[in-house]
Amino acid sequence: MYKVGVVPGKFLPPHRGHLHAIINAATRAEKIYVVVSDNRHYTKKVCEEEGLRLMDLKTRAKWLSIELQNFDHIEVLMLDESNIPEYPHGWEQWSKLLIDVVPEPFDVIFGGERDYIKHSKEFFPFAEYVVFDHNRTAYPISATQIRKNPYKNWDYILGSARSHFAKRVLITGTESCAKTTMTKYLGKLFHTSWTEEEGRYYSERFLGGNEDVFTIEDFDEIVLQQHKADLHALKTANRIVFFDTDAVVTQFYAGMYLDDHSEVADTFAKPEKYDLILMFKPDVKWVDDGLRWNSDDEKRKKLHEHLLLEYHIRGFKNIVEVSGNYNERLNKALLEIKKIMKTEMV
Image (spheres, rainbow, N blue to C red):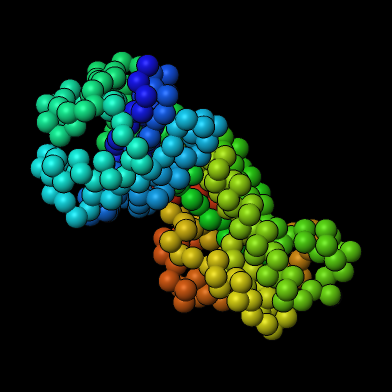
């Protein structure tokens, strides 16, 4: 049994093979330090090349901390190697950084690359270098493979990291345009999570059903509740997640019914949040569900145009307007979703 071990890596992203290596190391040493290293220039480059959201150092360390939180003898550390030569150069500088980051002397380094043995002996003569599952027989996956196609390799991504890769689709529109029903249809078809429009039921839950007493603070609260629902859906997403309504819609209704403005809604109206926005046009039959006011077709059209303008003003992109009957809407939505995925899902 070793006393103190180190498991270094970029973990870009962390996957089940990494977790297997860490747990194996934890059975062979009294204390394990998982050291997440990062060259921010390299990370930015590879994420941009694969069209992925940035996986910065803190984000990766957070994922691993969440996965390993139940093990008192395993600790996650961060090492910034942005200012030294990139691998395969910079071994001397990197070794000094590693020694500085780990808070106590270590007597073993666990890794998966045999090529590192020579350099490890040179720069860490006091620690043995132990190679674990070099051929990836337990989990035949690499971080590179995941970055190239996270959806095909979804089951290998650690649960704490999956929400980062899930494609995020916003279903939006004005009243009675089938967005709520279509959000549920899509969630079911893709066997994944979705959110419902929190504002639809707010009055019934918190105002005794009296919609006349709405204040701007209520719209603020709707935005916050919608945000919490979105986060929950992301955590349980299966490759893709569908959001029914967003802060722009809530702001839109605050202006329309109260002639007021929610600063909270502005905070959460972020264009970068979504990979695709499906905006349903109000050209299906208006259905009175007891929560709607605007049944006039001409007014419905103008409200749609107004809402679309609100998205454009805020810099939202990837907006696709969807029209037609219910079947046509579904098929159009499936076609657009297929464009943003790298593997078939339905």
